[in-house]
Image (cartoon, rainbow, N blue to C red):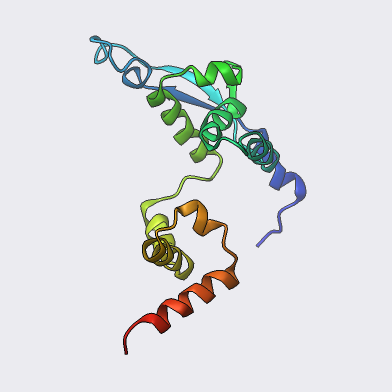
Length: 159
């Protein structure tokens, strides 16, 4: 087995991908969708630096994450954040799915099922259900706090 070099590891971030946007996604209400053909955009994978910038930029507004991700990944055509925010939701979601796929962030249904079975995910679900907490509130707990609350729930159960 050959060890990868730093250049090998960084090469993927320089790639671009031509992605066809189906006519039905581009113009969902058009009557001639079946006859129309899609158009293409050029996307690049997101880097760790991109995700850090997106995280900082969307700190106060989680709904901007998708917009920022698509805007950072769009190589052609280049668009501003305001222009991407003006897209219809179906198109933005399609592009976001493609950005996630080419960036290696797309999860298969097996991966999602596996993650849902993880002990920490189950613990978060139990705490949210038992205490009426939002996912945001549960995610702010430390591991120690999660374990303490689970212990308290276990002691509350009748023997």
